[in-house]
Image (cartoon, rainbow, N blue to C red; front, side):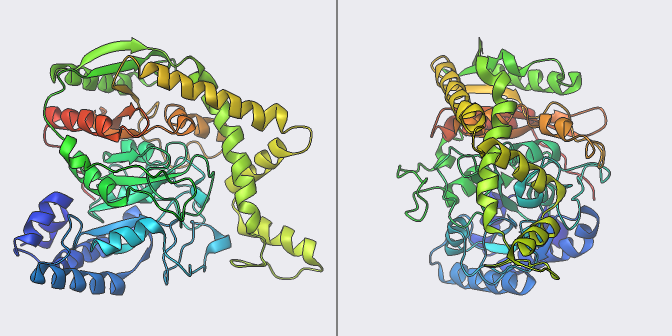
Length: 488
């Protein structure tokens, strides 16, 4: 079978070939490694490619397939991992100079899970430094390019994961989502990306940005693959105190045609000035497709959504300030040279090791948490967060899912917003409320702009109701039919 063809197949299609003995995992893995060598110099999705380990894992998967033991939907499937998940024996950089040569002594729970299921890990994918950004331009190493237009951003912070999935440099990927970091790049790169309910997936081994917001989730070619990956990583983990001990359903069982009895809510706060008319037209057309599948559409309101950006950019930087205090040049990671005393060593290490955006957020967060300001900022933001969560819970009394745009525009050009942090922050305006409320959200492709750039529809559901969002996303995917992929 042609190697090019192998990298065009979805996870579930590859699974059929692998279990049928038509192809080996080693063949598939070599096909992906060859494509990475050929294409990634232009896309720049990978920070580290783990070729030897990947081939070793592929051979082990082939043994399992031959012997018919412990076979799962991920056995022998090559995946990419966002480089903020700890991997024993492999660099975990968070795309930061301060962790440039850090090799973790342990492996994140989600990676242990997919390894046990026989998945092949191709390498670690680029991101905005410490997952702080919306464009993957904040990586300390290099920006990642959008496979649909190499002059444009892939989104962020999981830009490497989205770009690699779209460019067929992995069969699927894991990313993390703190304020839209899976869904926004999924929209910009024309793939499916899901942020699960907070607590659904273990965060043990995920390098923390904002601990009350971060959540690991899948990026995939289609909704079926997304459900397969979500099955693989979900579940309780005693190593993570925020993990919820709740039964995990088989999400693939909910991928049924038809939405009879479904109600889709349209929150008026998401269709506002600043939303690109072309994006809005594609999103509204997608919603009409859900209606054609049997869903009823109703208007709802999330009145406190207008405070979401302000609320998020107090809570997230405050938690980042606390989490990133551990990078001091003493325990691990980068240490500056040429200092007189301990205080100067701290200052030089953090000044040289962190990039501009990370330093900006640490300073904002430290200010918000400082004496005399905590109540005025962090405490007040936490109260607003509660109001936003209640708004969503009230909206879900009237509907099964909420349908909205993912981002106000399609992917913008590299360098277009780097000098204006506020404009960059506003590119997450439609995604951050989902994280504040802790609910699940998925981005599913809903068409291309006139310039040939992908646009995603966001579907949100109530806590632990990922299956509702997945079913609606699956029906939209079926209604829109076969998709094209970028030529890179």
